Image 1: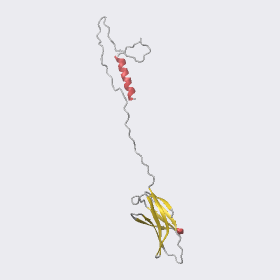
Image 2: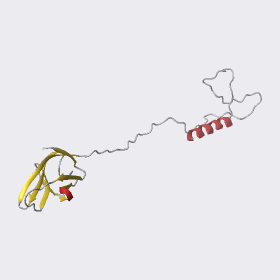
Image 3: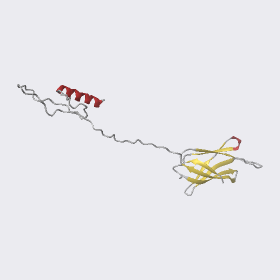
Image 4: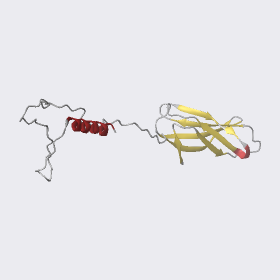
Length: 168
């Protein structure tokens, strides 16, 4: 008893070479039987030229489970019953590939969205009084003795440039 691999979820076509000999060979009816513990299935074979018979098995994934089943080619000639071939059919599911999209949350980054000036210097001029101006503190300045005083317009330009850099 030989074996054959078949797919449960696809159509399978089996071909057999059949030779009928005798003094008066009559018309033959051929079918393929699949035996399982739960159910027995019969599929009619179609004859073709040169003694070849073809059996088409539809997808059987809803009827059979994966595994091995006894398969028998049955031939009925006139009133006589023959089983010229018995094989093991190994039914398996075909390879199935699935894919899913994985959504990952983007890590949040720290960003400056707006800036405001907390304290503005008084613009009143008095004699012999110096007007305090906001200064820019430099953390990594090479020249500590040089300090630059920034005007309100300079601060607004800096804020505008940072906002544009963030949106690009």
